[in-house]
Amino acid sequence: MTTTDSTLSSNFIRNIIEEDLKTNKYGGRVHTRFPPEPNGYLHIGHAKSICLNFGIAADYGGLCNLRFDDTNPTKEEAEYVESIQEDVRWLGFDWEDRLFYASDYFEQLYEYAVQLIKKGKAYVCDLSAGEIREYRGTLTEPGKDSPYRNRSVEENLDLFERMRAGEFEDGSRVLRAKIDMASPNLSMRDPVMCRILRATHHRTGDKWCIYPMYDFTHCLSDSIEGITHSICTLEFENNRPLYDWFLGELDVYHPQQIEFARLNLSYTVMHKRMLLELVEQGVVTGWDDPRMPTLSGLRRRGYTPEAIRNLCGRIGVAKAGSIVDITFLEHCIREDLNQRAPRVMGVLRPLKVVIDNYPEDQVEEMEARNNPQDPRMGTRKVPFSRVLYIERADFREDPPKKFFRLAPGREVRLRYAYFITCVGVVKDEQTGEVVELHCTYDPATRGGSSPDGRKVRGTLHWVSAAHALEAEVRLYDRLFVKANPLDDKDGSDFKSYLNPESLETLVSCRVEPSLAGALPGSRYQFERQGYFCVDPDASGGALVFNRTVSLRDTWAKIEKAQGKK
Ligand code: ATP
Ligand code: MG
Image 1 (spheres, rainbow, N blue to C red):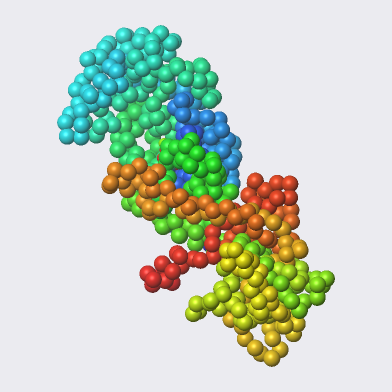
Image 2 (cartoon, rainbow, N blue to C red):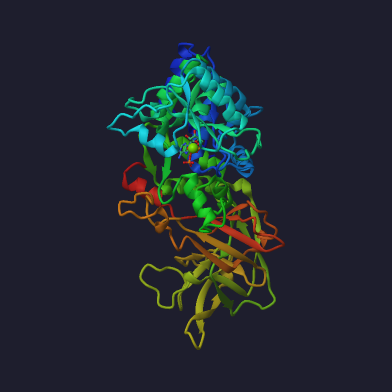
């Protein structure tokens, strides 16, 4: 097995938790949560957060909740709620009976808002969104007080109640926290707590026409759930004083927030907003397009949860942001599939080979190993006959130096079968393209070695033409041509770096007959080609494969060059 769950490896967050356990800070409890906003499908960045939160809970005998931070009815959908649950489960984590929604706390949050108004710590403000922005000031200049800042508690209570009752237009008023318009931290300059918005919420329907803002909701949801360690990404560091303020003013249970750096991967983007753009503009076929860094895309592409968990464990958790090389992700899936994926033979770009001296009606069953890494996976029979297909790239009429595969007059080994020698080349008269090869075989080399000790340097995969199944194969490449598509120094939109060749579809590939009826999601190594996974588009006997990853391990080379291995 691969070293999948290396989440136990220490990191600064675990050090904090261990210290808290020592000092009995939360009575020995560890309670984390994964809090997605259901406004898109999860991506591999979320996997880092999931592994961290669920992993920590598991390792310290604690609990981890799944909570939807659903405060934004215009961008959220039940479809996302479903997909997120499916993805978290697929990754291998279980929230048991702890599935929560921030929207379940709307009433409680309303009560908290009323408490703050009564304390003189919140007020109804009639400035427009633009004016609020203007009054906020900048990083270098303090903001200005709103003219509505000093409304009486009674007036605020009355207005807030009427906001809820639907008396005012969308956007005409907001509830704001009364903190400090001159604070060096912009989040503290009287942030908006609630807004008026007539939109149907995926859970509360039309019950509410006011919605709490994310910052007000998030910290209090953690508090309501008794979360001990609120682990979040670095961009929330500036919001922490605001969270502390809400919790402190309301005098409620106070979780500890800890920030860590987001996972970024090269040659892709990792924001739901951007991924949604790709989906909506039809750049990809959907959230689960195998080129997407979403968990559903990676799953469809053939990634295993083990490989993703392994990556998340190995990249570690730090305070400083960085971009993980996508070849490292590819390395993790190769490592996993090398152990578990059965080997098969599939020819992606077929070239016909006729073995002239092989009897026309003869078929032999050749014994092939299912996985040289794991003899327990056994063997299978692969039919061999007079007409075969080999890979077009395995023949060169005029072979360059170091090309050890087939060429006129050259002898090579067919995997699990015989030595063959190329004795003739048939070309298309018009185009000059090679369309067929004629070879002879040596019956004494069955099984792949010659009794006279004769050596050949090339071993090719093949399929029997009469027995092979036709398949469509989708070859994927990076979605972007630029390592960091967000690095827009020249002012370009990230979409201008899309790789026009990220998908190549091959329609008349031939695979060995053992693949008949292969179920969607099944993973194989096509010998010498890479790892492939049956796509759900495969139906009614038509086979469709996605290439998960090729066999060439660029990451291993990088590591070698760095002298790590
Ligand atoms: P996006 O920018 O993709 O919309 P988000 O942070 O807005 O991401 P949420 O649904 O709010 O998405 O995220 C849920 C949790 O996952 C949060 O705790 C967030 O910090 C974490 N998370 C999101 N993206 C990453 C990432 N790239 N690496 C690690 N954790 C992440
Ligand atoms: Mg978010």
